[in-house]
Image (cartoon, rainbow, N blue to C red; front, side, top):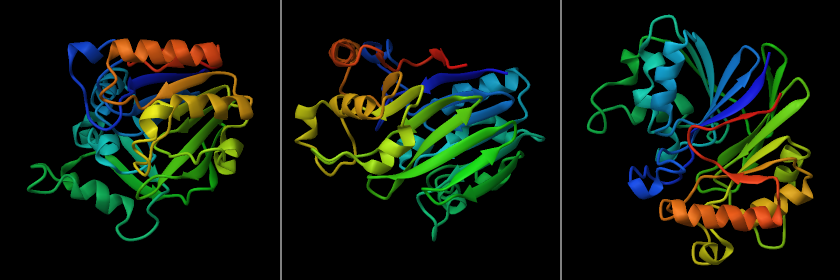
Length: 274
């Protein structure tokens, strides 16, 4: 049935549509996971727009959108997700970091209200449901897909996800800030033995020291987590907008020297896990 991961947006903070960034990609966070018959989308950054066009072209009629959190770089693609306007398309939007007022539906609706956006959420013609799952809980999708969650250390909260299918797994841990010399046991448990870990690698350790409290981590911490959790493959994710292609190539080479089965995520690439 297949299990694969495709990158539609790998950038953090803000889209970067510059020639200097196109090698790795300028769209913000959006990852497609195919797990058997299930289409799972991780985050709704600007990469969601081209993914939506592809899903319609393929005749896909249902998807599950897992939101790590609702900062703009992770939801700003949602108003441009064409399947959500398509009658007969079923979309579950799931989140675990709010759990109160406002709820996830209210937040997603608010960004589509005037004067921020001219087309309100209620005009979407698809069958859209909003579901809140507390971070730390697990749940199942059809076809034997199991999803585990964990809370992350990020302003306003965030959720990490682990998707399991037919003995393989991918862990998505973006927008989290580590504590020096103390690894987060919740993250270690979530990613333990994963076939692929996608981890917030926004900064170098040197850059991070000037940005403590901003809610992000480093590629060096990604390597440390991958080693401690016996991860098979590590993907650096959520690239800083100031890191152009040349900088990203340098970071990727340095990370590979520390953890050989490592890569910096590139928009448009697919990793097959099973």
